[in-house]
Image (cartoon, rainbow, N blue to C red; front, side):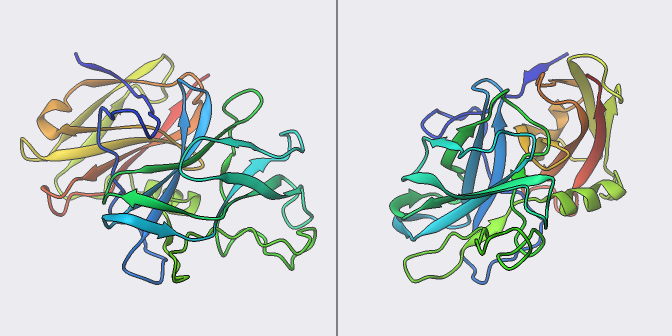
Length: 284
């Protein structure tokens, strides 16, 4: 039996698996050039990491003034996020704590004045990282444009917390890779691919690992598996050929408990078989 420990890595590390943006999710940007943004938790470093994945390659790409907003439960101490690492100077420029429009949450608008970057298609770029007291806290997520409270709503103090990543011409490139509503919709039907099945055992998961068996893909088809929290925070991913994913053991990061998702995506050589999603219950 193979055993894989899901690991996360920083931008300057050499990745064990190639990070690439998922397929099959709605595009919300207004241009063909996009930066797909997702929030990860690095279980080894005990830190959250915000990545952007371009669907284009460019040397000397000019990222303009930008903002990524992080939502955290109100139980977290009312103080600015300590932001570090990544690409350019990012700071927690504006915060609002438990506003009447969303009393269970605090919002932190993390801003950058922009920077010249080299981007490569399908290779995630670390924008910034941050830590919270106690490490991983369930409920942390990215601000949802169009659904979370806007500046005029009660308690928001006129602050605009929308996510925005623009180029030097002011063209919006931001796209959420996967948000909570998209995740919930995927979980309605665990198996959506014709003649393909993904099974998880045991489920509920009572130990520190679980096994997956994938059937219905041709041998050699390349697949990506992503382990996600209930709010869409990525805890790890792997890329492997379908014939290797038989009774394959995956270790669960100790920080992840409760509802979670295992999302399987085709890397393009198994057409028509994308978007398998299994809902998991991970016992503490």
